[in-house]
Length: 105
Image 1 (cartoon, one colour):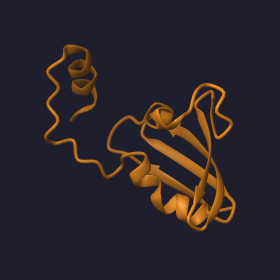
Image 2: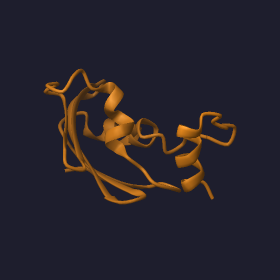
Image 3: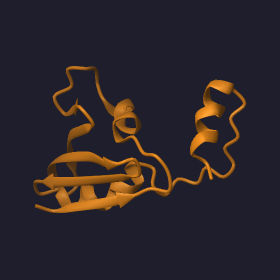
Image 4: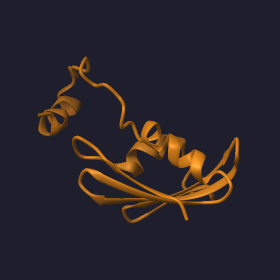
C-alpha cells in the first residue's frame, strides 16, 4: 500500500485541520479514533481510504488504499497545510495569539 511521511516546522494536528471537512459526528467517510484520522474520498483516479496518524508532535504518516491512493498522497501536503505561508498572520485576539506565539520560532 502506498504511504507518505510528512514533517512540519512545528506542531501539527491532522484531526483539527481536517475537522471542517467532516459532515457531522456520524460521517462514515471521516472518523477520528484517538489521534488517528480515517478518511475516504473520491479522487479523479478513483476511490481512496486513508489512515492519517500523528506519530510525533511535528510528524504525520499516511497509508492509503484504493485506485485514488497515489493522487490522495500527492495532495496530502496541501490538504494538511504543509506549504501554507503564515508569515503575514498576526492574530489580534489573545485567545489565538497565545498559542501561535508558543509554536512560532
